[in-house]
Image 1: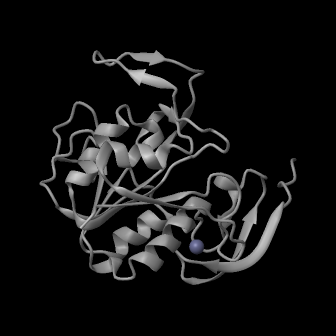
Image 2 (image 1 turned 60 degrees about the vertical axis):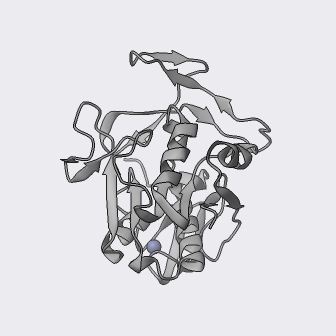
Amino acid sequence: MNAPASLVYDRAGYCPICAAEVRFQARQAWFRDHLFCSGCGSIPRERGLALVLERRFPGWRGLAIHESSPADRGISAKLARGAPGYVASQFFPGEALGATVRGFRNENLERLSFPDAAFDLTVTLDVMEHVNQPDAVLREIRRTLRPGGAYLFTVPTYKGKVASERRAHYRDDGTIDHIAEPEYHGNPVSDAGSLVTFHYGYDFAELITAWSGLEVEVVRFHDHRHGVIGDFTEVYLATVPV
Ligand SMILES: [Zn+2]
């Protein structure tokens, strides 16, 4: 019988999602996916986004919020519980856009069915590295946000990478042009996983502004108290100019 792996990290701290004193514990050194909150099971990027949300949008419970591709735990579950104006979408290709499918609104981020200025806040966690046309996605997100509204999101941003790199491209006929070794991440609504289309570099903030006109701030964490440490702790806050 294998003994459970021993803890490589175990500290007391405050979880901004639980809003409680908890322990942050990891059994693997890749904290990004393995440093769990003992209370809610969240991982660092969820807590980083929650910190920026609470600090910059303390009245978030009263906002109209669209989250694309939410997880069923952590900050997504808290937004769903806490904000009556929260809408969760997933993309089910082949189903009618705007329809409810498996409990989610069916939305393609490249051509959203929402009217202009429908939301105060759009949220995604690790979605932008899977989209085919990030420029179209950012323009659509901006279109559906009110002036002063914001797109709050996480995406892996590669240390030392000056220029963002496309890894794969979906052709118009749906086939895939693999430019680099295929990489897949887990997808809660597809057993096939999600193909990584981009490795973003430090130019991504400027690309967002060039594509969409959103004003971008990037917050990076190294915060033991809130359990936001390890690689890829960036949280992007992209605001519609007033
Ligand atoms: Zn927690």
